[in-house]
Length: 453
Image (cartoon, rainbow, N blue to C red):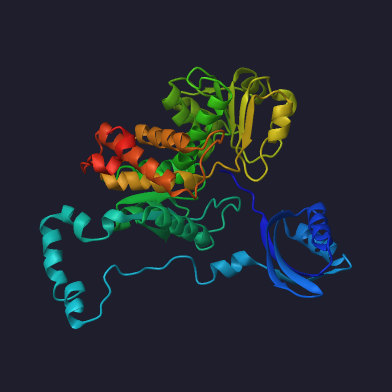
């Protein structure tokens, strides 16, 4: 969703081996503003214990206050402040490995020259054979210019690389397919589009990532003219997971989402796509609010209605917010029985506690609504089916699969559950076949008995 960065550090603390010292340390860290993560024991001695305590703070100033508070405890010594994230990112998070290692001259002749020439001639005669005899069919380009990276803004493509590597690494883990980060150093829309067009033959699909609004809309629209599927994840990946969350939230609130009036606060890349997918799913206009006239005009162009924030809160039964503005929704605006999904991270437009106290029947924030639940399975289904493009029906199928995969009383499933990505892939591939955009026939064995094929 929409992010503001926090700091993650590990404090290596040496404390006297006296009962209650650790509890006092944890209480002090929490009181100073730290969220406590994992605690692991480094060593145990007769007089002292050494433990690594993971903490999350808002900024450097808060980190200094937390460390100062810890060092003020008489029986505690802060030995080291470790930046685990920097250590993890050393040398990057991706590597390329051959599928066929070369150990002999005979292997070399098959992998490279002269044997490879026959494969090249085959593909020259029949370009579709590249799907079978190259890695193209299982490789997605992850393309960015770094103009809108998480909560960091326009930091440029090179600084965006750690994010791109992370998304690509997770994609490989959950699908077994390839995602290659492509950094394009330009803010010129036409130059960006032309660059992607020129390299597109290398890939089976294009995922656009972290591109500023409104450029992302035009870039995606132009690239969708290519003969391969294109998806801007900040738009459609977010919309898919948000729709899944809304489906389950309405179930828990005993509200029919198809009959409900839905309000979308914030009509940027994410909010606009959420509203469009909601309208496609429910068949009803979504009420939208945004401070930018161009965003409101775009929403109306897609069939939505507009209103002030106060009017939206009065009319909507389901309210979704993606503005990045903490505290935007005042408790006095909440109506009894509303479903509130305030999805900006880490600080939502209204807290769950405040929304429920104000009368909401269900409230959640963006802590669980993560695009990782969506994009791996979406792309796996698209590539498995050889889909030429992604239709709204495929996005809806992905959202329904995510909603169905959530444990009882949970808004969405864990993104670390591999079964979720399989479920999404199967649903997307099935929808691609039904939509007539699939080029590869898939049999019952692919979908499994529970998928209705």
